[in-house]
Image (cartoon, rainbow, N blue to C red; front, side, top):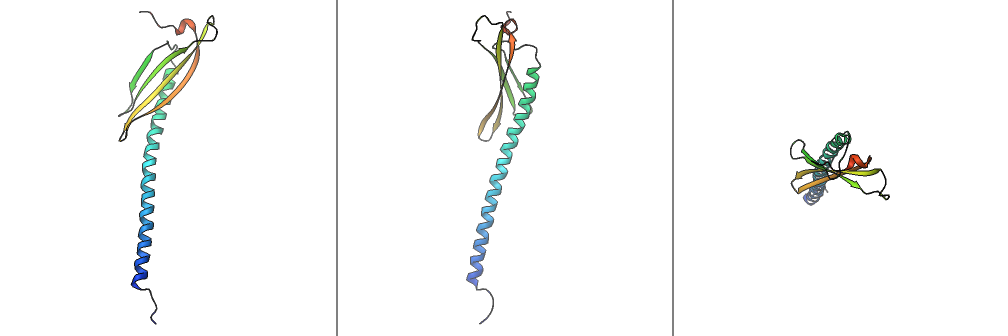
Length: 131
């Protein structure tokens, strides 16, 4: 008897090895795609937080006021302030909610990321301006 592998054993080993390599490359491809998506969300999160900080620096948010703008590339944003009526109509203060939506385009369509915050303002500050 000769020592060594038969051609059939070699073919079976090559098929098993090929299947393992194909499975690993599929997993790596999916992982790289997911990393790309996560990077987009992280980029929009950072941009949205920076924009929200700018809006927080404004002295007054008037009820119904809208802002919008463009970040780099296909990234854009919109924001809106909405006064929330207090339980006590005689209260001198209102809670004003700010909603900021970051929007960007992907190969699968538009994606959005929403941030919200709120602050208390006097009723006079919050009233829409009369022009």
